[in-house]
Length: 437
Image (cartoon, rainbow, N blue to C red; front, side, top):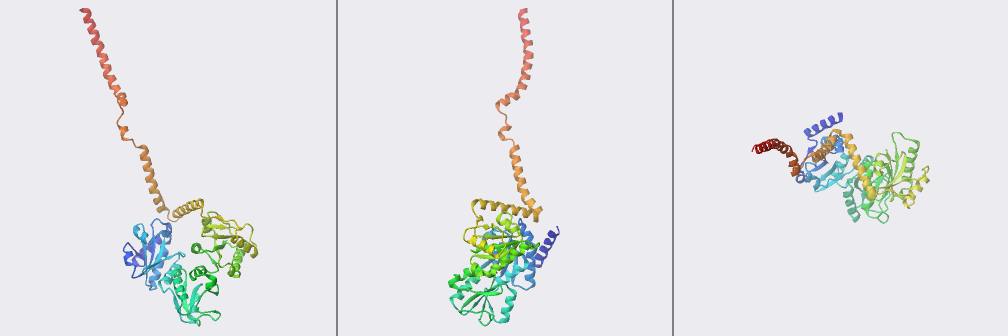
């Protein structure tokens, strides 16, 4: 109840203060001249109700920073043409509109992450670094950046295209050779480098293929804590995801060993597995359980094939780096059994699982609204069924001919009886008269 009151209070404050603007169909025509960060929501969406206070915090902070980014929200049930226009498939959906372009936000639903996304996408796609101090400042704020060094070239054109495509995920810069750290050795110029994991890696066209694909593969740290949002983004990769699933609140000796082995593998065998595996760990098994529609014990090692919703579990206990290497190689060469998948049966089962999970979540976060949402249609259906079963057909209200005779027999019998009672008297009188005659 307290959260509901707080959410309602924040809503009032945000609307009154102009932090978040309630938009309508006119937005389609009026959005081109300004920057807009917009949430598309539906009143029945439980996640939207949970997310609402965060959205107002985003609006308030951007306003207080003097940002040119306007923050709004659109009820797609009231304005369905908006949902169709911008291809809204789920709720809440967050988009940043920049002129004729729109960018989808697919990161964590936190204030800081959303504001970072908005500021990154709203600014230049590629930003110049003019000094060593500025380069160091950027590196201290970001775990991963891409940098182009050199003059005009076909590689620079490809770099700008890749930056426009992946600006929603990370930052892109240009810098002269003198600005880069002294430890960076460029074999040739122009060059593109990714700085992450405390080191750097250079793009090689002959080894890495086209630049855009390389950027897509390298836009994650080699090893990091993976959540549901980053795992969702990895569905776009061709890599398998190797995870240590652990309970960070109650770390065990085995949990620590699994995390250590996975991090060591990501560091020492990066060049060997960089095109095949993304490494990381996940705190808790809730999301993984939903993904595989089962239960993964903690701690565990699991490999996910997100392109087909499949997964692999080791058949024996992982004790050493050699055990982990053997398992990963077995997955690559087909010796490990693929579980799950996206067959018809699994697809049907997954739809049911997701629907059930959504309904349960709705009742947990907004029980009164959910009860009304599901109870009203159910009540109408019950009333229709009851009315259909208890209604008397129009033809049944008019008795059949046999029924008329049956119901009329009492009156007929009564009249007949009277006639019978009278007729003997008249017949007897007639007989006497005849005798007298």
